[in-house]
Length: 413
Length: 84
Image (cartoon, rainbow over all chains, first blue to last red; front, side):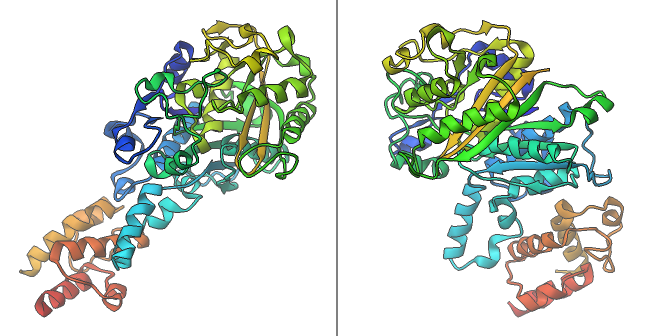
């Protein structure tokens, strides 16, 4: 696995950060200067040195796509972590593919190009505008770096993207069409990607003076999400192939489900059809062939908007569990914000780390749990400190604009 | 500007794009950008933009198509410099 998150870069640092409950949310003067209501956000701290370690001077010439950068770092790290070498002289590997998604690619690069173009300088755009701004920019860059020869594609389904990518890769392996799939997602950062959300008033404006307190999933003070960015990547492999090459195995994907609420029954472009969310979770359990009482913990979508209690209610209904019988639940967004298209992938990495190392990472900023949530589950199911626990199965869900849902069931290996 | 000097400036401009170090070290008028220096054809566009900046000239589409070797590039730059 590989990860580039606002609170840490690289798997080891990320494990340490999520155990400690390290926040990656900071004040950004640029947002304030541009008159954003929400002036805080999560941006991974990628130095020039790190950049140069992953991309060549030629790749970095005219390069201005933070999402592709984060995706390449996470993807290359994941590939190496899985035991593969990255070498441009190797043959194409037809058994390995990739589903690596994003929302909008290279928004800063796109902005530069539009200025040039409107100044009648279309010829001055150079050769790499298309590559950095096409939705599949990330899979194009990474596919070449790794020499992948199976399906190489980018999916896009808003904040569900990373979790959907994993399930798409999983299905391809299950169908016997590939033995290894690199799956993940990435997202750009900065005002041009976040502005639309600020305009929708879905980001919090109340914590500009105390950024680390801003992202408050499940809190009674939750007043909107804090934007984030980064990338997460996982290598999926058939058990047969992994055992044969004695690969490091973090966890098992038992199954999962993707669906949409069709923007009916209360679902809209921006809010979920609760029936569909519940069905997505139950169908995921069916697909994974587990019973709901086997779930030890949930890694929720839980963005820190007023909709968090609805999500808890949906989990409670589809699992048929409430009160003390409810599993542990947490949201990584309290540390890194809502990483949008990258959220699912970064959170999947965190979920798998919890299984591998048998702990529940803490929920920050929710000592004041929302009363509607407390009506359903007790406070101790929402740990605010790192908690050691025997974990066998964790359910992870992501939901996105367009009324789309994804749920994965992971098992300890 | 002498042809030698032009070649030296050109060499500096193509350096980030080359994929064959030996051909680059032996660069001469006969060197072909794609076959010898193994430059990705899409990057030829970037080299042309860099040349335009370096020499303050504008290279038209037709000249661009012919710019496949050191010799043709130098010829075109000389012509454009003489025009301006």
